Length: 148
Image 1 (cartoon, rainbow, N blue to C red):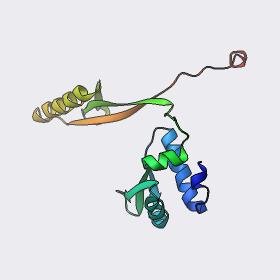
Image 2: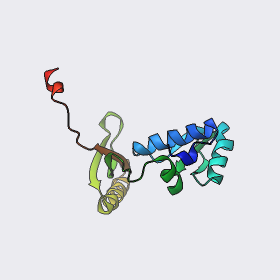
Image 3: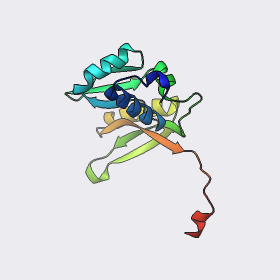
Image 4: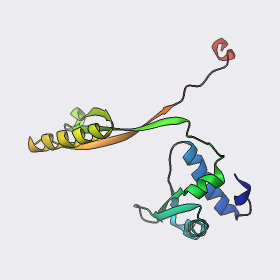
């Protein structure tokens, strides 16, 4: 953590550490219990995070601002993974439920929505769906791994 954040109260430091760790994993938000609202407000006033009330009662969703990223992540940091969104259509019933994957990109999103509409017009359950796909970078491994 950057020295600029070293004088913060422990709870504020902890929130920043959690958000920094999530950011390193490619997750840019985290849910906190609403008892953290005073901490979140203080960090928001410092310009380090943004936050809002969560969808689930008594929760808050928070993420780092650009200034927060600068404060807690070293310069030039990039997420060690490629993150893409894949689009598809869920169709069928019960055990026969399937997802047809159309891939990633704007065209795949448009097609998944269009096909879901076709399923619905045909009287079948069809819902557009998406998922985040995280592909980690290839990592060199030590030769002693081969001997184990």
